[in-house]
Length: 245
Image 1 (cartoon, rainbow, N blue to C red):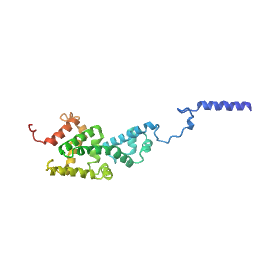
Image 2: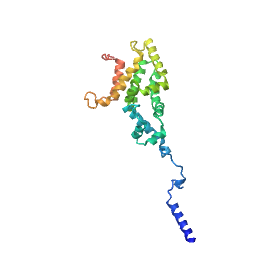
Image 3: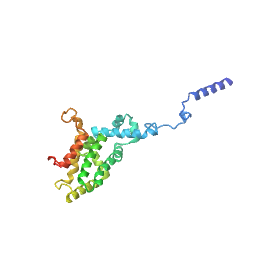
Image 4: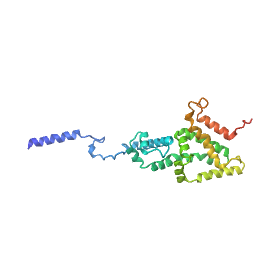
């Protein structure tokens, strides 16, 4: 019937006008469906992933790895659990990515002073102490996380890093210290295995607890520069009075 045909045509035209269009001008129905939790823009993908990594580091430093769930990390970053699951299926996978992308570069950087000063142990150890402070300032999560998960008994991060990297780096550093002692370049009374523990205690521990000093008149003005200067003075000059030039 003519009237019926005309009605169908009008309805079809209205449907076309009301159909939402994509930026390319094609009907939205033709665009591929997006999976739940998938990032809405490829350009934002790396930024979203980095936000999740940053949130994980902040929570791990605040409450420990074992006590942090993927859902908490998603909420800390301002995302849904589905978004978290899109990037990281398990906490172990997330931890492996953090080790590869965040800790491995820092670990490599801390070895630079020994590489650049093979015959000057004082310079190497002094620069290492300064670099530890610099790393802690650049990455606020580093001191607390290191104390909680690396130098504490049962730290999960220490276990995973040992599984990944072994102890070849540590053995090489201890060998260099022992060689310097035999050559008379370094105090023979030092215990090689305690040198790095001592450096961490002098640098990371004060930085990890610096928030507790805010109401302490004697220490509230102490910052990273003061800590670095104190450590270098203690390492190079000891506790005795400074000798005249």
